[in-house]
Length: 444
Image: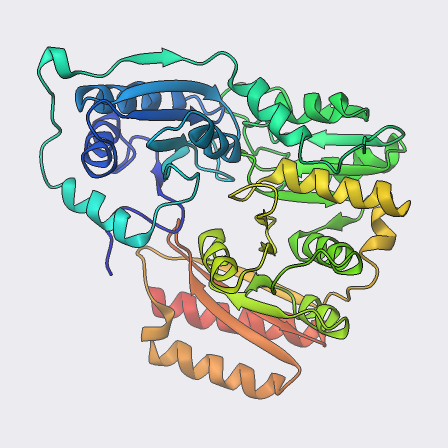
């Protein structure tokens, strides 16, 4: 199935360039309304803190209202909060204006269905086909209405706090929270403080242009310095739209999505609460797979993208999944990837066990892994290049059974991601750089 606009996480691009224009946003709203929202239906729209969010919010509102849909404007709110409120308001569609972990000059639009889940490829294809038609404007009496919801953040904050085990709080924990100057900048610190934690916020002063800049899950170096400097117990870093999480232990060491998944899986397993297999991706560290197998916990790999992890969990009856990057799914708590809720589950394990995060992750070895992003002038499939495939085969031959090679095209950027993993760090680095050079040459 070929799609022109939707990638692995909605439509995304540089603001002002096709498709991220006000005109396209209005047409996209009209197309989505015609596919998913009956006349008189309801749409919720939320956003992160990018300056361009105001423009896209207005354009989407116009497109939906013109097509006869009522619009509820949530304002800045993490992506999972918008998914949650789509359900709570019994809306037909949830809309998120965000480019997630990308810089401020990018933006994106993604959708949730009425259950708070991402749209299927088939539905996205139907919306794209509808884009070939003009945006519609109904007669005046059939137009929708728009209303701003001032309680959106409080509703989501209460939902997050309720995800903690009954009777448990965070008293005695000192937490540094990095909101990436993004959508979680208010709700994160307030939820943690509401549960009794002592909170030191950083990356919580958005100005429309500093989202993900020098802070958050993509650039956690400041968090790593701050946690030991203030003698905090743990650090939490979200990305710009709040669906991605990495953490920092008491020593300032980074704890990635694979390690967080290990902590949650082993804690649930020890209590007999783990259902189905744990699902990672083709990029998940081999150390996670080996550590879980040693505990007789089944581990499966899905394609990269939390939507594919979600599909694998639903197909297998599992409740825990995630990506190395920090997209985590805890399906007995919420329907989509949620950085704040996942962080609260980790803190609950710390409180319940009395162990620091460094001790909780110690049982999972991390194999040396090198990722090289090769930027290309165009989208390309590395599997269609004979030169690239020959280079991959040679690298796999050198690794034998002691490592892996994964090449994949990004779903959101013109980038080929080259990942090599194995027991020997120097060999891994050398092979990754060699493969990246081959990919770069083939892409010119």
